[in-house]
Image (cartoon, rainbow over all chains, first blue to last red; front, side, top):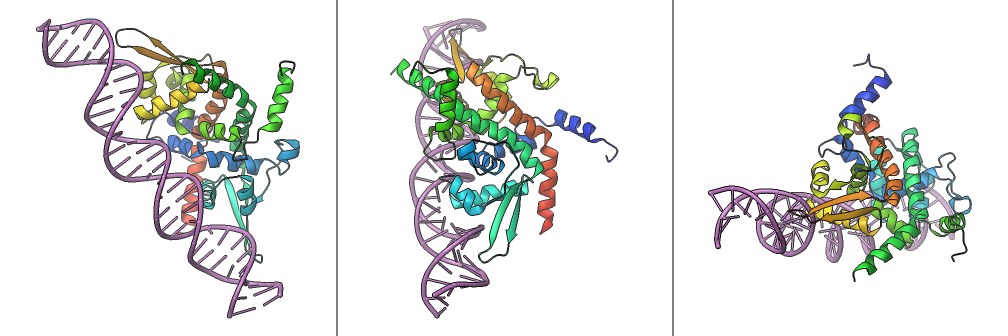
Length: 147
Length: 147
DNA sequence: AGGGGTAACTTCCTGACGGGAAGTAGGCAC
DNA sequence: GTGCCTACTTCCCGTCAGGAAGTTACCCCT
């Protein structure tokens, strides 16, 4: 067991996990990742704060406070934000750091694992933003095809 | 409008759509894409049928029948599969082709737009399968940290 | 000719889950 | 002491997903 190299373990994992199967753990993981808040939280933590000015900078991850995330991810309920952050922490994708300041301050940051996933998520978010027009056009065509 | 180059249109779209905003159309699109069945359907249609033998071949998209998808995506209900396929068709990501054979045969295939999204989805599915062990390890640590 | 079979849905019911809003802890400023 | 701040937690309720049964349309078999 301990005699396997990382590469061996990786190839074995690749062979054993199949997200198409319902019972597979990786399927459950994929279900978890396929969550709108997960996508947005990862996209938020991965981009630097100046996404509005410089677009999505692929640079170093940034730690954000709970309230910052709450503000950036417009429309997220506090319950879902907490829940999403907890599950991401549990899965080792982000770290939670509580500093005992006046009112306790909590900051979240991507781990290396989370950073690797962030690449995917950022791509997904970017895809949605760039191909929005195509999708909208297709919808218009579809809706008028047979009224 | 028609005088803009594709690059110009793209940069404009990039500037206008921001998936972090709740009201933005791209946010709604991202929500739609962040669906476990969407991810799996796209992953299925993009991979050739021999994913079990040759893993996820990045080759040409493959048309699949309703029943094939239903079988491959273990656990999907017929209702959700139909619903997912309909919305993907509406958004121009897949095409639906009904051939009037004995019992009508319906096949689905990725469009070019869908194929570009498929790259993302395949990456996501692969990520889930390859990093499953890391996540599992992190969960074990988290759960035993404070019982 | 009538019963059975098949593909691709559609409908109905019910339980789980997400959103909204209100409540909690606890330390400091006034 | 009263109030406020952050970061949650709890409660309620509407919506939505899952499961199973029903539907349509056609052909085959007897």
